[in-house]
Image (cartoon, rainbow, N blue to C red):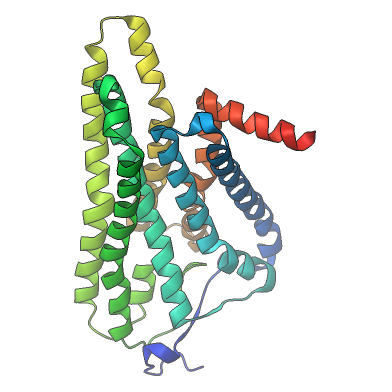
Length: 314
């Protein structure tokens, strides 16, 4: 394949990248990644199974948690095959259409996770500020509508961003710098004007993850204001404790995302493998940590998971 040949998008074959400079250690590097994937898939599946099968968990808070586990499963599966394929078999080639599909689902589940965290912040706000009307406001039908809105929001905002890549020509090197298809990475290989792509991509992320990252902290300002108005210290402690798991989930989603942005912007002198390892792990941190946080910090989830594990042993 000629790296400098002007190629139409439909015939492009991209080459994914493992860990630059550490190719001989790919088999060893795959071991911790296998552990992370196994933890993410088993942990989120277990939490999802517990919520579905345990009637005591059929409440709004746990319905939103089931949405979070579903998005985490989708995010893990989206990168699983290409990443382990590179580490195990050096399978670097990916077709243009497969690349777009992977890119779309990675972005979709990322935006959906941000949207679910926003919905969970709303859930906590209603539960603390208006507990008597909590069940009336967050009915099963309304939660279903919120779930559908989350999917539709992500699909409508991301489809134009990904579709616009098909209008580009790729005449530069076809080597991508990640082990999965990353939108800015693909655009850099184009010899066509990408200003429209940049504007649409930036607009899509600002209108979703960007807006959510502002609204979620604002919701917690209102939550904290409501909690501080509660007279009893015991009630304050109980109210704060119901938010700890969600605050942890928000932190492990946004901190790696912000850290990766800072590394790309200010860590240009760092070795290439540092950028690659951070890019590979930041998508795995939320799926790995969310079930652990909720299992440790939420008594009902912990009891349900233990009950399921004991029933399998017997």
